[in-house]
Image 1 (cartoon, rainbow, N blue to C red):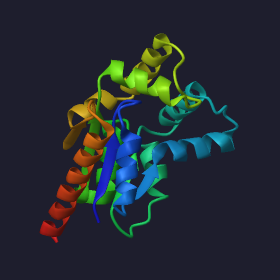
Image 2: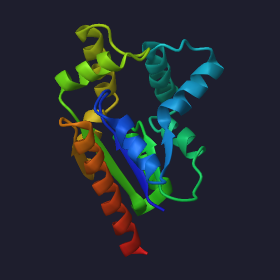
Image 3: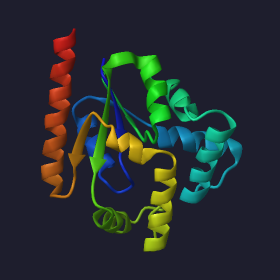
Length: 185
């Protein structure tokens, strides 16, 4: 089994990567879903800022790898898996300690301008309404160490072209990672 840790700034295209992975028969676990599940139990509001503050607080109260630990509890070791939402080197190390060398970090990249436009266009409840709000969210994400994680990713996919181009890049990378898995068996 190969586990892919997927990272990238909001609006970069991680959801499309996940769609392609699911279409390819790869399981997907979203760390954000794990955070939201725990936030609901704690009675935290469901807006992006409240969830982000809760997640950050849990890292401070417990340890920097708490969300990795809680995500691993959800993982079924039946096959290839993509874990979405990894935000720091500490989380990555926690996954490495449990999963070993069959772990790969993939970062999806897109410029801030493109990401902002995408977030506004998709109109989700957590979409920024102003550039200031977008920058604050980026600041929170980067404050958790996401920039270091992106810089050290095993593979990067730039998503600044068409949707079809990005989906094809994703399929090629998933195929490459699958063939690497078979070579190591």
